[in-house]
Length: 91
Ligand SMILES: [Zn+2]
Image (cartoon, rainbow, N blue to C red; front, side):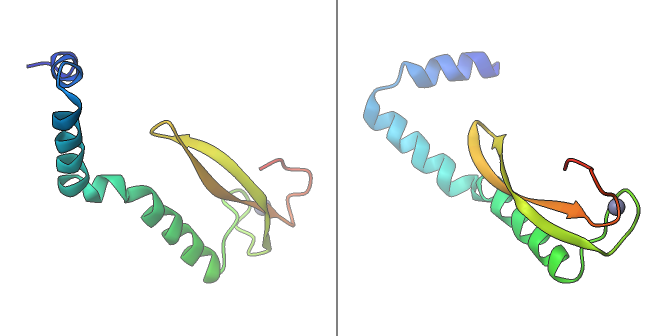
């Protein structure tokens, strides 16, 4: 069975069965669904220990606002950093 066929099958289900399927996914695929916040947490901890510029390895990196990215068609907030040594660099 191809994914397209599975999607078609899901779309043909009634609302009650679709709700049951959603419950199944949220219960059984939790590690996948929560992967993004964990990833953000790791980034924040990395910063707490002293974030290093990927370009010049400088430790003089400051927080520089936030930006939104699309992850799995959801808006996710990301921290933007700016290196003090590499001036004029966008993000
Ligand atoms: Zn730098």
